[in-house]
Image (cartoon, rainbow, N blue to C red; front, top):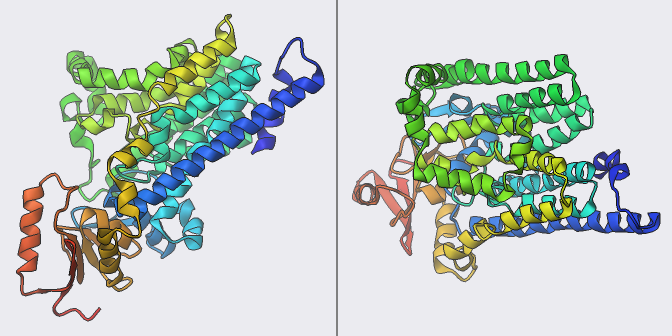
Length: 493
C-alpha cells in the first residue's frame, strides 16, 4: 500500500529551511518509523492474542461463533452458526457481516480461530498508514503526520478493536482501517478504489453502509460535486435500510432484530425511535444523559482534543454508531474496551486531522497534543488486561490446567456435535454443531470446566454440571484439574 500513499502527498510536505536531500531523508526516516511502528504494534498485539488463545481464555462469544461461521461457509453452509440457545441459523439474522465469507481462503491456509485474531490485529494496524498519508498531505509536516499515526495506534479504542480481549474477533473491527482507506482514496479523488474499500467496509456490519455514505455529504460540500456525493450517501442509506428492515428480519428466527429489546425504552425499531424523537424527546435525552455514558463520550472523543469538531461533516460518519451505542440499554456498548467503537474511530481520527489543518497555530505542536491525549489513556490496553487476568501464566506449557484442557479437547472426534463450556467451545468451532453448555442439544460429547468462571449465573451453571455428571446418559471419559470430557453412553464417536 505504500505506493498508494506516495502519489500526491509527498509533494505537499513543506519543511522550510532544509535542502531537498535533507527533506527527502527526513521524509524517508519518518515513513520508516511509522511503517515500522505499525508493524511492531501488530507483532506485539498478535503476541498478546496468541498468549490469550493458548491460555484457553477465548470465549465462544464472539470468537467461536465467528470461526464457526467462516468454517461453515467454507463447507457450503453460508455464515451458519449455532446460537447460544442451540438453534442453527445464519449470522444474517443478527448482524449483516458477509465480510466473514471473504476470510474463507485464509481459513483454508490456517484453519484456526487464532487466524481471525491475528488477521484482525494486522488489519487494524494498517489503519495507521492512511492516517499518516492524510496528515502528511493536509498538515504539510512529516512530524505531525507521525504524531497522528501513533495517536491512532495507541488510542485505547483502536487497541481494543485490534484485539477485543474479552470476546475476540468481530468483522466490524475490520471496518476501522477500511473506512480510513476509503477516506484517503476519496480525498485523493480515486473513486474506484474508494468504492472498493467503502463496499468492503459496508459488508462488516449493518450500520456501516450509512456511516460510509455520510462521506458523500462531506465530499459534496468539500469538492462541490453534489451528484457524486449524493449518490454515495443515497447508496449507503439504502444499504443500511435494507440491512435493518429486510435482511435481518428475514433471517432472524423471531422475524425481528434480536437486539431490538435494548432499545425498548426509546422506541425499539428505527422508525419507532424516530417517532419517539418527535413525540417524546425527553425519553431519548434520559436514555443518553447518564454519568456512565458521559464518561464514555469523554474517553472516546476527548483524547483528540475536540479537533474533530472543526471538520463536522467528516465526523458525521461517526453519528450512526454513537447513536446506536448511546441509546442502548446494554452497558457494554458504552465501554471503550469493546468493539462497538469501530464505526466511530476512523471518522474521529480523520476529522481530527482535517480539524488540525484548519488551525493556524503550529501543527506539529497540535498533533503532539493529540498524541499525548491518546497516550494518557494508552495504559487501558489489551496488554494490561492480559497481564492482569493471568493469561501469561495460564498459557505456559508447564501449566497443568492448560495441559488438562488440551487433553480434554483432543478426545472429541472431528465433526461430531459437541457442547462445551464457554471458554472451551471456541476450540471446537470447526464443525457444524457447537453448543454452549448448559445447552446440550444434539451433542454426543461434552467438554466442561467445573468452575465456569465466565458465566453470570455461576450457581445455575454448577447445578447443570452436577446434573450431567450424575446422569446415566453420560459417561466421564476424562477428568483432571476441574476439566471433564463426557461421552453420551449410546455414542460411538
